[in-house]
Length: 448
Image (tube, rainbow, N blue to C red):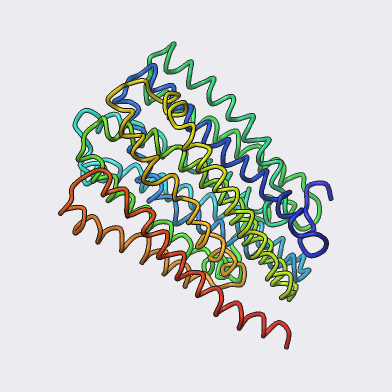
């Protein structure tokens, strides 16, 4: 069908690109619209407003990543059923996923609103930004059910290769969001409140549009609201894949909270500069994540179909495409860094902090493809715990040790940032070795 990709037959590289490019565009567009908030605040509400919103990203990621991990589990489970040709199980998993998304959104909203101020205090947020950050977070979390419905519904469509329609929906809602943000910030002077309310409105539009699409689907993907309920069998499989992935991201975000606390110690200018620079890391990550999502989805379907040779080809093609795409993005932003940073701030004391982030983090980010692609291929075969464990040790434990040892002895912004490429290298080596060992055993089982 027009909105599906046959992942079980034909040229893989072409199909991976058809799957990944809209998904990469989705992540990039989403980050562009998020970055637009920073641009609007930086130019019309001041550096403190930019710092206030920028410093909240680690807290937001910490609280939502566990549940985003569950959406990955839903993607793997549904894709696996597609490979097995089990239409009845696809339908039950779809309805389980939709209800799970609503529950996840409500839980995050309640928890996030309650803990945002204590978390900001724990991060030593400066006095001149902490109140603004608190206001932004409380409004942002209030709209979390809409965001979760969009994320989980996208995962359902992604399991069958439909990455185009979520992109078109995001484009439309993003344009609306920017327009509303401009009106709220410039015309009404709402500052961070304005961009937070605009985010809720955009997520409401996104979730409503995707639920409408699922209601109009044919076959096992059609959403019937009367059948929305949790089926234990499918929930168990989703949790098995999704919880380790979510815990990995959650612990990873916890390390970023610690790092953000260290960044906060350098003052509001460093916070604003880092917030501006990190946007470009997000742009690049979403491109890599697109090929990671292709790896997990294509592997899941072909693993369900017990096609070992095609699973091997998925790993190879996704690793090549993901690494090359990251190299292009990383160095493209690096060589144009002076132009790109000016889009966020013209403050002469803020810009140097952003430049340091470009030199010490951005140009090495392509190394992350080593563990992102191999880890997602392992998840596609049902092995989610081991790549999560390696990421926790490499991207969290190692970073925390670095901050409380090396960084304390050599307390510079550059030394703080250097742990990123070091942790990527170590995590990548460990995950690649795990993939080589586990995939060999799994492929042997398939051919027996």
